[in-house]
Amino acid sequence: MKQSPLVAMLSLCLSVAHPAFAQTAAPAADALQGKGDALYTQAPDVQAKELAELRQRLLDWAKLGRYRADNAALAPPAAGEQRVVFYGDSITDAWGRMRGTTFFPGKPYVNRGISGQTTAQMLVRFRQDVIDLKPAAVVILAGTNDLAGNTGLATQRMIEDNLRSMAELAQANHIKLVLASVLPVSDYPWRPGLQPAEKIRALNAWIEQYAQSHGAVYLDYYSKLRNRQGGMDKALSYDGVHPTVAGYALMAPLAQRALERALAQP
Image 1 (tube, rainbow, N blue to C red):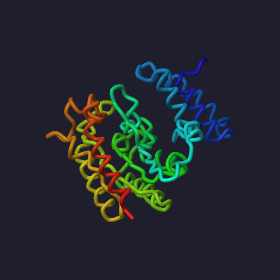
Image 2: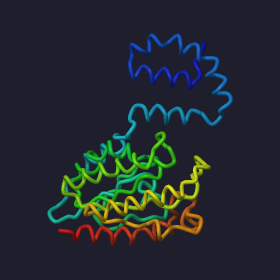
Image 3: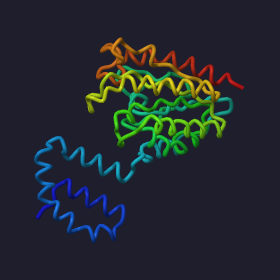
Image 4: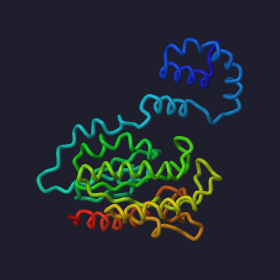
């Protein structure tokens, strides 16, 4: 009998986690065949693309491979160069890559955003994609995908701990630190009904307080982009989460001013 994609993925997970256990668990996987087929039939959104993404996440959960070649090709900073790494999720990833946007022309700024990432994933790749690039400063924008549950349930404390760990790693390596607010969101289109607006306000309050008490600069995108509903207007975000060209145009000078403050610190 041909395995359903869901059962095949279960078998792959077991084989990677513990090959011996996968062998003993094979009968159980076979028993799930019928149920798996039924579930797959009832869930048309679970298609080849989603299964491929699940497989890739299993093999490289933090996506360390995304920038490995780019990092190897990047020369060390020149004498006097103030390299900056912008570190984040899809909001950072699309900056300068989405049609119509620019990414600080003429500045030695490096984009190391990865779409969909949570703070836990970013913490794993922080050394490779930030510290090893020898930047003078880093701008960290993260947390919205945690609240959306992209890699599972995440409490505010979990997000805080991951942000705190990245901040400590940066400062221990003499990297000036800019902590950005999470952008306003009233609803996640890929996971509706979570009502994240209040959670984002609470997380941003913590980020601001942490930055002020730990020698970092707080970059407040939130206040500039928020509408009365706690989200973003269509002019600034095409889906309520990701900025438009106009949204990035508002964000750029805020980021530049925050970096100037951070780089001026002794």
